Image (cartoon, rainbow, N blue to C red):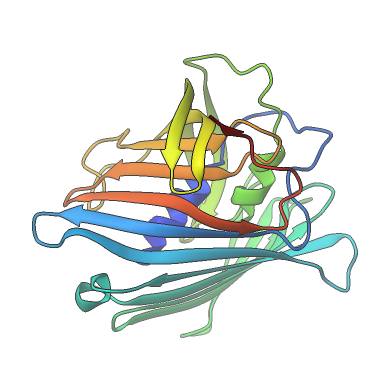
Amino acid sequence: MKAQLFVLILVLFQSFYTEISAQYAYQVGEELQYQLYYNSAMTGNVTAGEILTKVESTKNTGQHHVVLRGQTKGAFSWFFKADDTYETWINSQTQLPYYFRKRVQEGSYSESKDVQFFQSTGDIKAINNKNQDVRTYKTQFKVQDLLSSFYHIRNWDFNNIKNGHSFTINLFMDDSVYQIDFQYIGIQTIKTKLGKIECMVFMPRVLTGAVFADDQPMRIYVSNDNNRIPIMAESELMVGRARMELSSYQNLKYPIRFTK
């Protein structure tokens, strides 16, 4: 099971609604850290790894630079070791990516790719640094990369969303544009190590295959406050079960809304 799965879960946490809010949900300096857990008959319940995301400033005041690093850790590394870094440069006004960088080291497998987005024309240039292969793509959609989606969709307006509502996002990943459907389930208060948090609950529809046995295997819990940050995700896999939970945070734009 690749560490990229957990990065995808993180992105799916917040790829949701269709209208942008006037208020940005994050700011430069924000850091979010997540613990990843895996449970199976072979491994038992183990801490699988951690993810850290940071929002950084750039010399260009119209951009945000976001860095995500995901690593396996502890006993899980005996079965599978990964150290992945993702970076994106985002237009701070449109919330669309200019550039995406992916560096993956998972066991003996490694990957180094850069993607350049020309949002005004719908052109995408993807570079495989290992073999210098350069490919271009054309899309009619305004697309996000694997990481920019996480921050872009946090700015959507959730105020009028209703139970059972479904919607779609456009995501460029692994040389293809995917349209991923989501369904809003409702509000639920969940207990975490940080405290009790009221969350909006979503279920994405994913492709079945080597990782997921069901096309809706995942529940995603997003804070029902102005931050709209992913708090927890739970997913049934082909083998075992994965869970991801917010473990710490710094420099949030708004206070997390804890409940008693």
